[in-house]
Amino acid sequence: MSVVNISCYKFVSLSDREVLKADLSARCQALGLMGTILLAPEGINVFLAGSRTAIDAIVATLRADPRFSDLQPKESLSDAPPFRKMRVRLKQEIITMKHPLVRPEAARAPSVAAATLKQWLDRGYDDAGRPVVMLDTRNDYEVAAGTFDNAIDYGIGIFSEFPPRLAEHRTDYAGKTVVSFCTGGIRCEKAAIHMKTIGIEHVYQLEGGILKYFEEVGGAHYHGDCFVFDERAAVSADLQPAAGRVHR
Image (cartoon, rainbow, N blue to C red; front, side, top):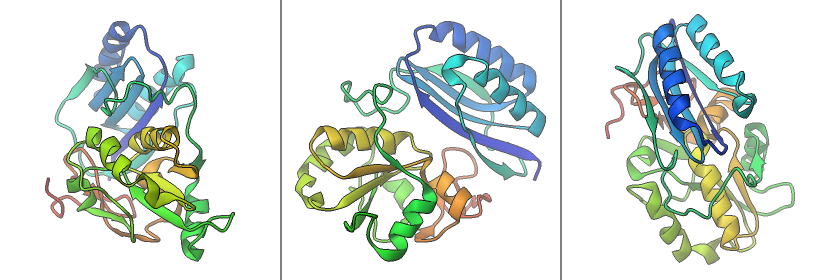
């Protein structure tokens, strides 16, 4: 497999999105990359595929901007690019929640690393002795591809449905530790901040999402594949394409 696929995001204020769009479009085209970069006032979201050399070059380009210097892309490999074109798009949110008071750049929600989460799930409780509840913040068709064992999900069709559904179940989490998770970290970060805002006390986001979990600890306590938004359709716990097994 010779194609490197990366995904990463960062919540940071962007006031020069038109300039960024032009610069990143030109750079990605010159490197022969395919994929999507989303630019919103709240930050950047990146999904790209290309050769090892091209990927290393675009990551270096992004990190040369002080706002993106700490980007840590998650990687997987495939035989062919899972995207058909290269697009840099301007959006109002890099992930639409329709809760403008949620500003992850102002203060990140507490996070738990993959290895620590596995330890919690191995024994069924966190370091403070609280039961651990896994909360899937993804859409229903993503959950259908695979999820953590005994995870809670609300059967939502779009992410903006998450806040009102959560409100109906807020009291379910009293005395428990809630770990929100998603594909790459962006939705579960917003979800965790929202949960703290509405008074759920013990909340963590899974750092780097399912893909980082797969990368660091494999598929422990997870069943099925992970839906991804490209032509691979899904990846397995070893981060290999599982295309054909999942359909939206």
